[in-house]
Figure 1 (cartoon, rainbow, N blue to C red):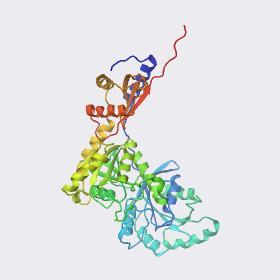
Figure 2: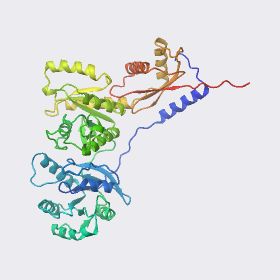
Figure 3: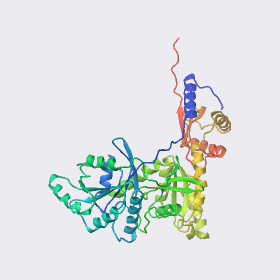
Figure 4: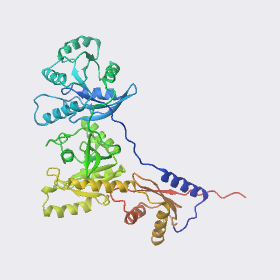
Length: 472
């Protein structure tokens, strides 16, 4: 460092930050497996509304349009001190085909893995042929089944629920997901039906790293997830916007377990979206915040769009580690590769540090290369530079290239510390403001010296306040 002449309060603050940084722990503890409740039923009977009522918060996307939920989505819930996993599913239609057939298959998978099944029926419509077909399957399932008669918003509809006894699933439980009527009674019955220990199922070891799959709509996120898992884990269709809720999946890549979250495509601006699309965009941003690293999927066969750049910027600003996956590489010829290189140099100039992998979700090309890229990005995200080494490097840097003069005075950088990780955050203590261009220069040189590939680096400046002269 050029000069280490800070006042005692500056050095005390420096020592406090350095000690706090040294003690920071990033270890994650595993949790025991929880029993699973699958919420099933035909489209638009209020399953997602009931899920939100049970959770006590608006998690599942809700809209007055059939078919909004398409994948199986897991949420953590608690009632009477009992923790369990609540799985929301898309509408189940027997003999469905195409997109609706894929949705129904997701519901069937959820039921096969559940400890308790909650069948939701619209009490204002009664038992339809769909409910009779569902009930026939559930009666053979050999697991507890609860029958919720939803949309019983007042006493006049109570009598209508009696006809649901014909389904052979026991007592219909009247409830209003919209207004909360009798939801506590339904939760009591649900918790009473839970087994003491969850059923035997494949579960993962503690602490898998969390990966968010993000990108604009129809870029191939769900196809990539299905290729990684080796099963039809997420609903895929040629229609843009098929995925609405984030979908969690455990994926084994390169002998390591990862928790992948497939998300809805991010639109140009959340403010321009409406209804289910608006809430889906919000949940995608929440999934990014909950992740440790994000894979931004880009269509390599098409020019980079403003929408693509907004998605990349959103992830970088969230402070998450970043991997850029250029999908549909099997469609890219030599001319397109040269053009893409120029587009990357122009459009992705803000994230030159991001890891890059060229993949094809359709053929499986190079998808296994994602694991090394993820590990590199996460190692950088967790990396910490010792304070002595950091200050020694910064001293040489500032001696060679001091900060620009501002207001007739040249700021002095007194000392620095890495105050945090995830993302790596540097704090520079100085006698004056440091221009944004100089901070970018410091970041670039910092990366050249220490690496930090695949993660954003934040640089904060703290200006020492001038103290009034002491009175004699």
